[in-house]
Image (cartoon, rainbow, N blue to C red; front, top):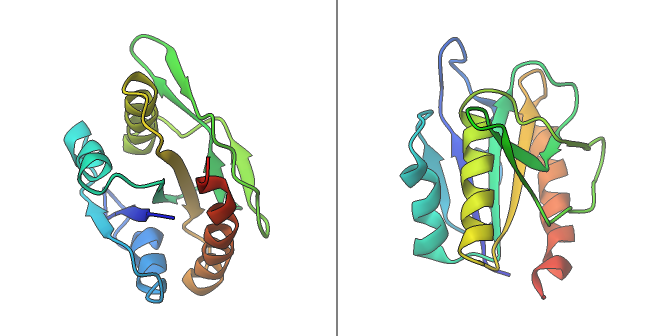
Length: 158
């Protein structure tokens, strides 16, 4: 399974993005890890898709309000009210939950942009976008994410 991990840096009032802390604890995973600036720029999110051609594109993001790690299944174009729905629904681990609301900021833009590209270009890559609550501790979050990655492996053979 070819895996890449994208994650976001600090933004607005969030000076310590939980996704940065979690990625630091994923040292045993030998795969590209890409730090995204928190900007509405689709090239940031699509460039790794074409450069690495992954089976799984795992993106980690900070959720200031959540209580559980959320697997985002839908991104919305807020201007046209069109949606992109993931055709990939990974098995949940721990206290993870599915979500159909990636928010109204860069995370939603990222989910929508990547899912749309996968659909339009008929790519085999599967997006797995995780929102991690800022209130989570990085160590337990990284353990849950490692378990999820282990479960993703059978899904990549399609």
